[in-house]
Length: 175
Image (tube, rainbow, N blue to C red; front, side, top):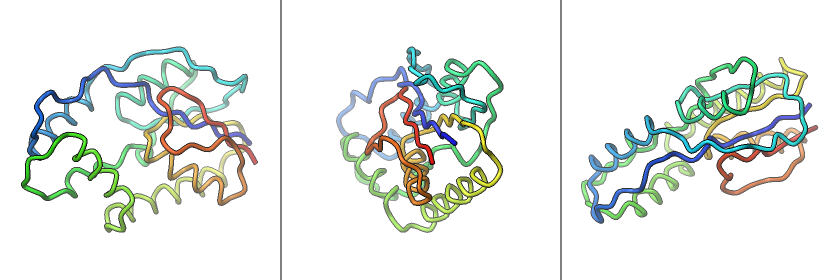
């Protein structure tokens, strides 16, 4: 069994130009990000005949999935990126890069929301491996892919690992 992980295409939205941003400014930017168009590209599917394609329901992932996979794309809620912004409570105005770092730190934290999110990803991987036998393509988001990769490796899958997955690249894991 092969599992291909793909991070959605890059989103066609520039980072904020304003230097100091409130949480409301960052929330507004991420809202725009969620609905922005993607920058389509060709993807090397590595010669694998993918039997099924699962995707996050977020538009950037769905657009990517429909572009690269010609069959039915099945939306799976657990593949949706964790929204860590509500977990950030500071009232300070900060540069966008600092906000991005705070989000990444929250992803790695033991906050109950993050722990629950990771548990759902683990349950998804367990269910996937119990129910499926063919080669499956999964289109999702960076943090979700990192969680799935970790779980696949725990279960004996091998493949080219990643720290921060590249947009529009297939990472294949097989057992």
